[in-house]
Amino acid sequence: MEKIVIIADLGHFKAYSFSTTPQKTANLQLIDSYDTVEAHTRLSERITDSAGNFGEAGSMGWTKGSGEAHTLEKETGKRLVNNIISSIEFVLKNSKCSAWYLAASPRINSKILEGLAPEYKEHLKKNIKANLAKADKEEILKHLA
Image (cartoon, rainbow, N blue to C red; front, side, top):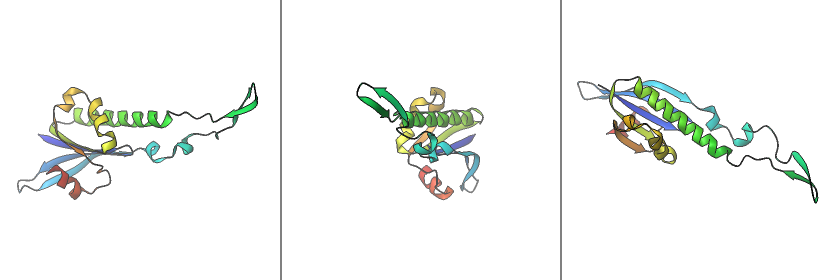
């Protein structure tokens, strides 16, 4: 049976097939990968109107509000985590894996685990609270040992 390694942070997702050769050499084969552009842009780059452009007549004269959506960053983070959860479930559902490993940045690791369906959690062999999104295969294999 196949083993899957999932590497994730808000901006990156990678899924590897993990196997060992008869000589006991570990092997990682990339099966899915994507980068999220939204995670790499600043909030100011995503909002098109400048702060204070919306004037409003008030009892004390003319006022200007910032028009900021204070929860926009939080909602973006939730959406990105939900996308990661969906990607994990898709990869696991479409593979014949007996076990899988998760390496996600500490900031989102527990949120991912909370959002996963129970049938996927039960096959999780190892949870690594580390951001390995930019790590090479050798470093990833060290964490799996």
